Length: 247
Image (cartoon, rainbow, N blue to C red; front, side, top):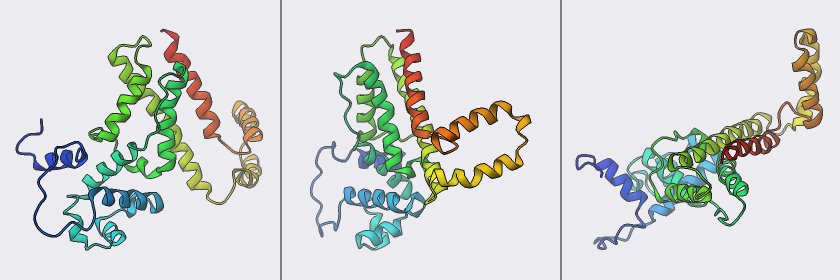
């Protein structure tokens, strides 16, 4: 339970679970100009478009045609708004086919996490702790657990499998997002054309025989110094192999 002396936590939980709580009496006075859902949607759209650092109460007010102070009647702070944004994004998760083979279900757990970050890169800037509070995140966790229920894992092991798959997907998505931001309009192939010859010029090849050989093979295959998509597919398959090995 939320302590009686913690109104901020109580308010946040009420906002997160606003659609599940019993209806409240209609307050007297003018009808609100927008809803909490609309405030959260505007914040998510702004973060998707311009990045998390651009999200502010003033910017949200401008997007909705409100005065900044009036936004606080919907959300008490940017911190609370962030939690609502994360949960709203989680509500959009694709379902996991519970009748698919177990490997596909496990892959779907990681795929969903990775796809969410690629669609909303600003999530990488949000601290992950204490965000598993709302219906969106809880429904995701429920679906993830259901995907591996009955395959021979204990309850604690089920939680750890979800965590391992999530951590792997987040790490790879971070690399994919970083590569997109760093290269911008410059293609990987063009970047490698520019950097590759210079690297050969300055690096003493005899000091790095294995790195030189393997790096050359990777560069020739991908026309880039790394391939996040390929690494993800390879690593996820091996990770699932390891998880299933002892079952």
